[in-house]
Structures are given as C-alpha cells and as structure tokens.
Length: 185
Length: 185
Image (tube, rainbow over all chains, first blue to last red; front, side):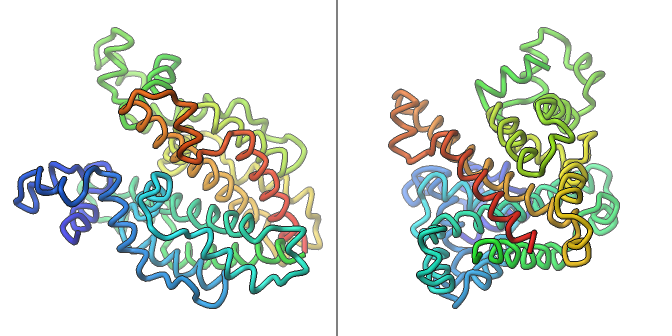
C-alpha cells in the first residue's frame, strides 16, 4: 500500500496503474490482483488508509469536516481517490452516516422534521469534497506546468493563484459554520 | 468541438486524447493543435460551450446554481471538465464573480461585513460542483460496470444506488436554499 501511495505522490492518480504498481513492487501483476482484484479495490484500500486519520465520532460535525479536510489533503489527488472509492462502494465506512450521527446529536430533535440529519450530512460532505477537489485540481495544474517548464513549484503556485492549504482549510471551516447556521434554523 | 463532445459522451474524459480527437475529425494532429494548443485548452473550449446554457445574471444565486447544475450534467464528466478548465484558467468566464454579483444584490449591504459575497459565492459553487462530481462519479462506475458485464445501464444504475438526475437536482436546490439561509443570518 505504501508503494501505491508513493506512486500517487509522485505521478498522480492518472498514472497509478496496476501494471506500474506491480513493477514498482517487483511482483507479478497476478500477485497484485490477488490482493486487489482491480484498480477500484486498490483505490478503496488507499482511501481507507488515509481516512484512518478521521475519527468516526470526533464530537461535532465541524470537527469531523476538519479532520476530513486534513485527511483528503494528506495525499495528492486524495479527494478524487476517496470520491471514486465512495462511488464504487469499495469503502467500508459510510461517511454520510458518521456525519449524520454527529449532526443528530447537535441539532436535536426539534430540527428533525425540517431537515433530515442525513441530508445535512450529505450537504456538508459535498461542500468539503467540492472544496478539496477544486484545491487539488489547481495544485495538479501547477505541478504539470512546473514539470513542463522546469520551474519551482512554489513560484508556479503563486503565479497560478493556488491558495495555500492553510487558507483553503480556513475557507472550509468558515463554510461549514455557514452551512451549520443554515441547517440550525 | 461537437466531435470532442461526442467522444466524451461515448468514452468519458480519460479517453478524450488529442490523438483520438484528431483521428475522429480525420485531420492531422498538427491541425488540431493549431486550434487547441493542448488538452487543457480543448477542455476550456468544451466547458465554455456547455456553460453557454448558464446566463450570467439569471436574477438570483439559487437560479444560477440550478442552471449550473443542468449545464454540468448535460455532458458526461461535465463537472470534472469544467473544474479542470477553472483550475487551469482556460475559462473566460469567472463563475465566482457572477454568483457573487447575484448574492450582493440579494443579501444587501447589511450583510457585507459579516460575509463577503465572493466567499458566499465560492461556498455555493463548491457545493454544486461537489454534488455533480459525486453524481457523475457514481454514473461513471455504473457505466464501467455495465460495459464490463454487458448489462443494461438502467439496471446497473439502480443496483449501484445511482440517484436519478431529478433527485440529485432536487437535493442541490434544497442544499443551496440551506446555504443561503446560513449566509443570510
């Protein structure tokens, strides 16, 4: 698994093929397929691995979203990989159920008719994923530009207006607060 | 451009290469590169094209988000393509500025200190993109599964729990309303 993560950090999701991973691991492709029957299963394994940093019940939906932001940004294309794992059902955890449990406790019973906690949880998750997907799309463009002209990544980041992860994190935290205000009415 | 859109509908973003497009158009790759110097420029052109269905000033931020949802879902991988175009700066329109102008008019001056309209606009856009990216990731999984086992797409959609676009659209509209409630406090 750590070799797959190394390849991802260096080349990105598009270049993580089963063939390349088998070569990097110096195993026959068949041996790799024995562990992961296809790329979706492999991505599911990687997503599970980065999500271990997100506790299922951190105490509030806002905290959950902060942990999730940190986990998704801990790996290049982390949001894309995790979304693919969610979509293909290769993730054992149900993120929406976890956030929903936090929200139910926070919002209390009086809001349960107006807003289902599960709907609110999906809303929060789509915002966090949308935010990190945008950030990582910008980072990916900067990396590709940097690679093609041989300039330093930092300069390119600034030139292309890639926000720092600290700024992006702050925007996500404030956005989650705004959504929670809307949910709590 | 319409040939590129045909290839996208049939094969998806991963298989839209400049080479395949040139072959489909029956032109030399050099002729294609004269129009679009690289794939990012091509994706920018496609994104511009699907976004013509979104008026810059439809009258409210909620209406803008509805038009955007329809535009992004009008093409396979439409959200991925448009996000790539935004990230690489190949889109002439500034979606965040457009939504921000709608929000400023709606929220009025009394909210301008607490929330910048531009921050609110980015929040709404990230939610809409996150929603459509998730929907299209699920659709993509269903298409790939359907292709590999030769079953009908409709059956696979249901089996994999892919929401209909009508349901997804309704969730986005309700989510935008929730966010606007949070922004208007």
